[in-house]
Amino acid sequence: MLSAGGYLPADLVTNEELARRYGLDTSDEWIQERTGIRQRHLAAPGETASSMGIKAARQALERAGVDAAEVDAVIVATATPDSSFPATAVRIQAGLGITRGFAFDLLAACTGFIYALSVADAMIRTGQCRTALVIGAETYSRILDWTDRTTCVLFGDGAGAVVLRAEEGEAGILSSHIHADGRHGGILHVEGGPGSTGGTGLLRMAGREVFKHAVTKLASAVDEALTANGLERGDVNWLVPHQANIRIIEAMGKKLHLAPERVITTVQRHANTSAASIPLAMAEAVGEGRFQPGDLLLLEAIGGGLTWGATLLRW
Ligand code: COA
Image (cartoon, rainbow, N blue to C red; front, top):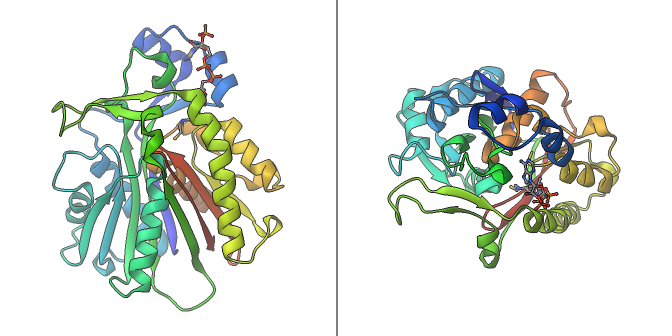
């Protein structure tokens, strides 16, 4: 992995402002206490997964010192594409002026970025591409029920991107471990959609149920990734978790015996940006120069499906 970039929409909305704007019976105190979230960014009219993804990708390419013309694969994890097709990835490819290689979207909800990394890594290893842009880009504000205080306070919009390249050496993805169990689809899903009701549909979640699955499934994915590489918890330098809830993030940090400053957290400022949350967190950490060559990074996520997984990578 060469570098990471991110983009957040300009409209920064605090909990108090959100409650005022949408007439919600909630409070800053309730939201912060249960989730850690203080604010989120919301896309402006006309701003989409592709327009934000292009900006995140440009920053990632610039930081990596890679020209867009060198990219031969664009993989976008999103549950909120601009439209059913062309794929958001193809729109981003065009926006960056790339005319070769391939581009496609991948949907695994909040686990989308881990799935996309897994696919990109496999394609690089099998020689199907050499330089890949892997992007998470979401506009959940468009699929939220703004009258449902149990879900609409939890999410935000944004995009993050990383550049992967086939290279010899120690650095790079060690392995990814992805899972799905559709029996639990009903506890976090979008009701309706382009192929059923014709609209975008609205997000529904049984928060408590998701919370229970999150703690156990993330822990098992993390153990699976470490065991597969003959590594131990103490070997991990940085945890870059999906940013849904500070309590889940802190529980995972404790499980790995990591000092709080070794756990990248953005949920307080970004809320849950689904597939964009991990690459956005990576982009911030890269901007602050936190990752050093040789550092071991552990990425993990769980989301609708249910889907979950973990990636271990050497910076
Ligand atoms: N403001 C104020 N009160 C709210 C509220 C809000 N925004 N949302 C819910 N409440 C109320 C509920 O109505 C309920 O009231 P009642 O006891 O009178 O019925 C009470 O708060 C507790 O609701 P509950 O849903 O049981 O809260 P919780 O402690 O489980 O916290 C979540 C809710 C969503 C924060 C928590 O379940 C969670 O984080 N789950 C995991 C979600 C997640 O990570 N999802 C993404 C995975 S990708």
